[in-house]
Length: 189
Image (cartoon, rainbow, N blue to C red; front, side):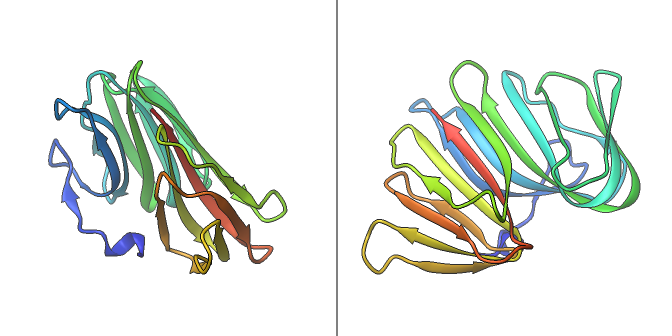
C-alpha cells in the first residue's frame, strides 16, 4: 500500500490532517501507540496527547521549526527528529515548503518505539517475529526486496510504499539501490 492512499483525518485540534498508519489499543480500549504521517501545510499548534511520548521525524519538505515548551528545534533535513512529551505545548512554524512528519506516539511506561533511517550499505534490515513487537517500514527513496521466512513471500517495494509487517514476520529487507532509504519504526510492547 502507498502511504498517500491512506485516508486523511483531521488533527485532534483541527489544525491539520494526518494519515494513521497503524495503532494499538489496550484491552480496555485506550490507545497504547499510534504511527501516523502528519501533513504540515501551515504554522500552528499541535494537539496535546497526555501520557504519551512523541517522536516527530521530518520525512518530506520543510524546513520548519518545531517549538516544544518554548524551545525551538529546527528541522531542515529528512530524518531530523524531535522527541517530546504529549503534554507539552507544541507548535510548528513553517519556514519553507509544506512538509510531512512521521509521528510516533507511545503510552509512557507501557510501550516504547525506535524510529530510524536505514540507508543502502547498512542493510539488510533483519525482522524478528515477536508477539510483543511490531515493525512498520516506509520506503522513502529507491526500492527494496522483502524476503520473509515463508516460501513465496518475497515482495518488491518502491518509494512511497508502506509495509506494516505482521508480528509473525521473520526475514530480511534488502535495500536494492544506493539511493534506497527506509524509515523503520519498531514498536515494543
